[in-house]
Image 1 (cartoon, rainbow over the protein chains, first blue to last red):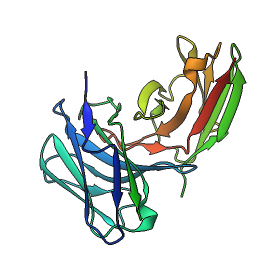
Image 2: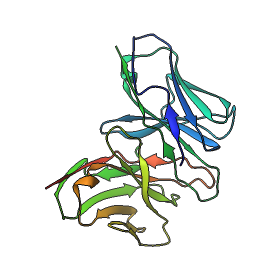
Image 3: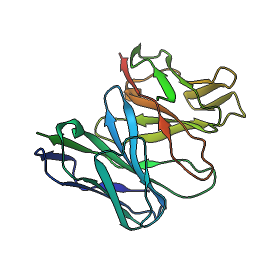
Image 4: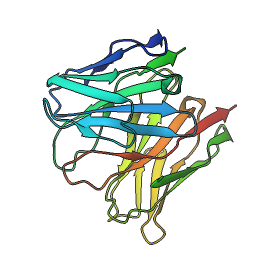
Length: 114
Length: 113
């Protein structure tokens, strides 16, 4: 069973704080993704990574950065948290296999920035 | 630019009825169309998926209907059950070997007794 774990289920931070969201997958997947989920907007891709130290911007990368130093771990960083970054953050992983498009999601981190 | 439009935003169906969720896409290069199901407190999970070379795919009570000319696809849940109450997301992708998915905005489905 693929398991994607996220470091926190709930997180409350203050405006201007630096925030780290951690994601770990145990299936040796090459691809990892960070999304944010907001009501009425669905899942929007923030960043993704095909390999260690590789990263590519998604649709809404502004205000975020990522780090992937090990294959199993993908971190999302909010350099200076703002209230409009209050959201549910979902991490996902998938194998680099031709015509295998299934992504495996973690349970999410609900971040509140006050 | 929203490349996958999903409707309705919410849906209430009686137990035993048919639930229908619709999606439309713009990018004709899309070649894989999955549906994800998300229960409260959980991440989304793949439910069923279709490629544009077939017009329908059925897995148990869940069916995807695909209309390539209209650039539309839909999820039908037959004999809907309270356990089907969840949020459903359609998605699409076109990148060979790249699993970047474009998601719809989601449909919150509630099945009432």
